[in-house]
Length: 371
Length: 143
Image 1 (tube, rainbow over the protein chains, first blue to last red):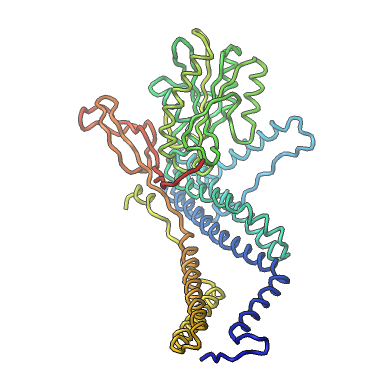
Image 2: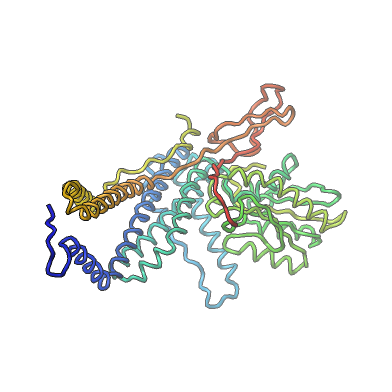
């Protein structure tokens, strides 16, 4: 079929065709290389965006179905859920940072009240535990909606302007964003069913320590119990469960310190902490400092009290992946709870003496964890 | 279907059509590869075209491999839209006799929830653990 004749370029026709194809590819890549790279990146972002859209829609559907199931509303809650998913929170102006913590706290308080009121309106038959869980479910759906919209914004902006740098910056952070989105997708199920999540590791530690003892309510959405550990009076603080609730640990610790006139020998805070790649989930580490995440209001409040009364602060953390923090609790993290309890007891023994008063506070979401 | 088993299944993916552009590229590559293979077989019988036949054979197989790989890639992307939700287990234990029961999570379970009387000693049962097991993939870590 292919005649072995010699072409005018000195080779056979097949070699000539190959040479022409390679030359063409070379020229195309010289002039359009960047554009091709951009289209490849756009396609990659498009694929992830499609997946994000699917996850977001699943989140919305889950939220609506759960509200219908638990809340038994008289009317269809779909429109109200859609409205909820578009909520925005404007953080306080920080040009003059003095007093910003209190402004931020106020905004967050208003947001929480607003969210709770909305959930109560959407799900009138839900009990307080279910309201907390529904609020968490809607918040997870809200986060997924925001992630989707931001990625879509950059994708469309990149497509419109054909700017390599807009597309490149979103393509580079996309793997991390996708991990977070997938974590929130599994969080949705956890919140819907009221399963304990990885973030609740600190709460589980204190729950195990306070189980079987008499509890009293303290500020805000926290419960406390007082026990004796080797002659040390230990006040244990936990966010009230089993509903999805993080409470205000700053307020609870402050109240306990004030009740004891600042005579606290040590405060031990237990929280879940983000592990680095290579570290095993469920590793327990200890150190010093106020291990309270979130917007920083509670950490600030505790630090103010520490300085005022010169109280030593210790932290025990259980390490886990960012995805595990909002997903149902892993077995490794669950097993680490007993190790963390031993560490807390050891810190109490080593850093305080008999007759001292100690505060042990659990931080995190108490969903699925009673006391 | 119970609520617990609902949590364990993989979420279904929406039906997604393969882009017509990608499909055209795959089809053209596939056709060209088959043509190259046909020419290769044809040239193989002619002693003076043995070199061409080898070249065409290589091109044909590479093209065939590439188009199959592209087809599998697009299929994989469609499948990756879904995400797996691992089963969550609830452990119920008796504080007195140590009776232990592990079952799938059911809505309403929470840690330290009382779960009825113990079938062995009639003492109250307690939900002592709720967790999900993540299957570890064996991998060689250098660090």
